[in-house]
Length: 119
Image (cartoon, rainbow, N blue to C red; front, side, top):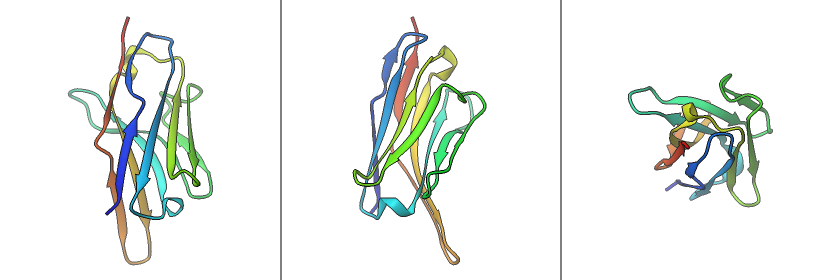
């Protein structure tokens, strides 16, 4: 059973930084595309950033230049470094592991972690 556990969230002032971590267990981490999503109250879940098996990254326009996604395959962990945080970054952040083969689709989620940006 694949498990994803997020950590590193919390309350931060505008302009501050946080690093989210997501530890994956129960499967071979290196075969998954990893991503961070977020969901604010009353809004749909949206993609924040993703990183493929080969290390190709993609970011939402709203976080480009402020966030960096990275992965450490030796530690089975994906990170999201967030700088210059804004109140509109306040949301529950979810880690996602995805993989598509010729016959199957795999998609796993963490339980989510709260990030609150407020003075």
